[in-house]
Length: 89
Image (cartoon, rainbow, N blue to C red; front, side, top):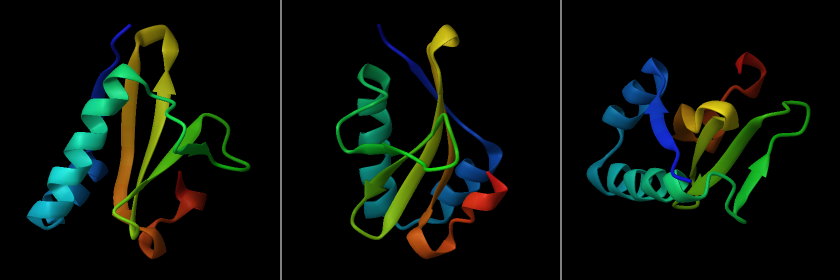
């Protein structure tokens, strides 16, 4: 099964604000999430069921949800680790 990947408005802004190499690496991860939305390197957030994070280039994180019934990965944020406010998710 192939999932579709959509970016929230916030994630779109986050991605546009990143430098080219970060954006390129993020897009490669997003392409991989289409085939496997729960890769071994992803982690479900504690206290936030259904919300996952995956590391991007050691400093950044991609935070997303998975809607299996719709075959959809919704990206919530693409930010530096220190800039993500998990309470607002």
